[in-house]
View: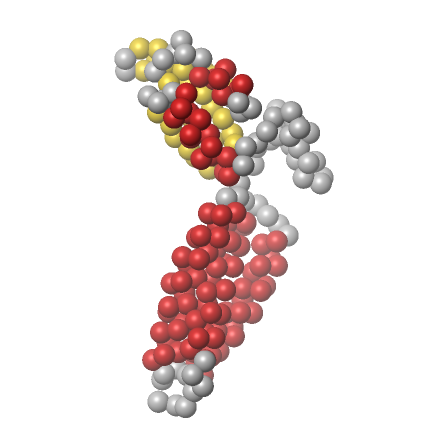
Length: 187
C-alpha cells in the first residue's frame, strides 16, 4: 500500500456526498424543467466528482480510499433524497374518490382554500364524488390530513404533474402568481 495522508479517504467520502447530493437535486430540477440552475449544479457536481475520482485513482491500491468513495456515494444518495424531500419541488395532482356523493367534499375543500374540480362518478357501490386538485408538492401532506378529517372513507391518489398552466396557473416573469393572494397554496 502507498503512503497516504489519513484524511484523504475522508475528503473522498465527503466529496462524493457533495457531488451525489448535488446530482440528485440537479436531476429533479432537470425533470422539473429548470433551465438555469440545473446546468450550474451540473458544473459544480462534475468538478467535485473529478476531484474525488482523482483521489481514488491516485490511491487505487488503498482500501480506505475505495471505501471512502463507495461510502460517500451511498451516503450522498441518502442525503440527496433527504434534501429533495425537504425541497419538495414541483406540483402534484391529487385525485379523491369519495363514496358519499351527497357529502360535498369539494365544497369543504374549497372553503379551506383548495382549487377543486368535481366530477360525479359511479363506483362499485353506487354514486361517488371525484375531486381533482393540483397543489404544490409541499402542500400534499396538509391536503391528505384535510381529506382524512373531512372524508375518512375517501380513496386518494397522488401523481406528479409537469407544469400546470391555464386557469390562473401561469407564472409571471417574476414567479408571482396572480391568484396567490386569493387562494393560499398551503405549505
